[in-house]
Length: 140
Length: 140
Length: 140
Length: 140
Image (tube, rainbow over all chains, first blue to last red; front, top):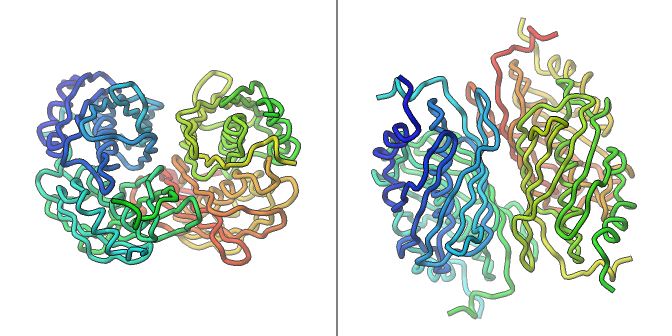
């Protein structure tokens, strides 16, 4: 039986140690859509004392991973880019929201915008996933 | 007095909590060039039990950050992309090596290849930094 | 005296032989915003008999160039990416519309969506420009 | 019978009106590898009187298209990025050379460097293609 979006994400989440280690929270999940939240803590800064580029990237990549897998088939990220638009400071709370640009049999494209508490865009992520033929309900 | 590449990286490293938290090691540093190493531990997996895309991204982004700042002026990453070429498994040791593609007064471009122990390329990163007018020796 | 968006684009357009050679038409121009149109003719196909990737790229790049220069300072594209989402056939009429993602003193980011007559997205372009200190009214 | 790299490129070239319209020349072709040349003529400038970004992009995209199709299966570009590193002037002769970063059953990655007559890199292109199951020898 086909799994629902939240059932798929639950299966992913339990293995996703990095998403947990960064303290991400799931705010919304639906077919092709995901919203995550993360608070920038003091283990997340870079050499300038602001959030490391890897923080917004990892948040965006997790958001795309959950969004793209909700359709029921295993989806793997193959190609991504991120523009760092605005500095992110220690203590800021970031929200990442995905938008499904296109979805074919083999390839899906997603945009993920990360915004701060003031609703300012801090990064723009664009990613491509490959949909495999394997269905989530057949995974163990 | 102008700081040397390793002096600049030392100043960055002490603030770079995320680079430390991920256990990155500095293998080589020189003007415009950096090599880092990271071991994939069990807090770094994603929903498929392999390394999260944020791991190779963060490793590559740190490598570019160090490489680009060695020239003596503050350099900030503005635009990056990464291709995930090969799955990275738990326990693998990754090496990231930068190549300076171009460097002008305002803009620098870097490629960072991440390879595994078998010397296979696992990700290809391309990034753009903006050089500010601020010199490292005037920073506190 | 500061030039208006359409005055700047007129000055650009007369030198822009490639934009003209591809038969692009200006539909809208305003501060930070541009809409262009292009018809895919039989000199624009690739080895598969569909529109060459360079067509949607060139259309998107021109759209960003006009949009980003309307603010009055010389803006040059430094970094761009494009996802080819849907095949474009001979004879199709494409519309490219820019969105200003962010604009600072030095760097601007733009997204350009190209759609076909059926309003389907055929490509997604993201680009970064560098704003120089030179004003358009001082150019000859 | 499996077609050779140059036989595949000949079949592509005859349909590739845009590659021809831009005056590209084939210098080298081999499995996974292509070198093309182009002279920047006066129909190729942009609003600043230098080569339009679409010129180096189109040259790079054609180079990747030929390189990736030489393996015998239909390969389509899905995702590309290009860094414009150095201005290209009217009359310059550009050489584009591909490098195969990785090649799997479904996905291939290519880098294309464009250099000028002084061997300076003017643009860096990275692209992803999707390999279909269709073989070139079965095409008409």
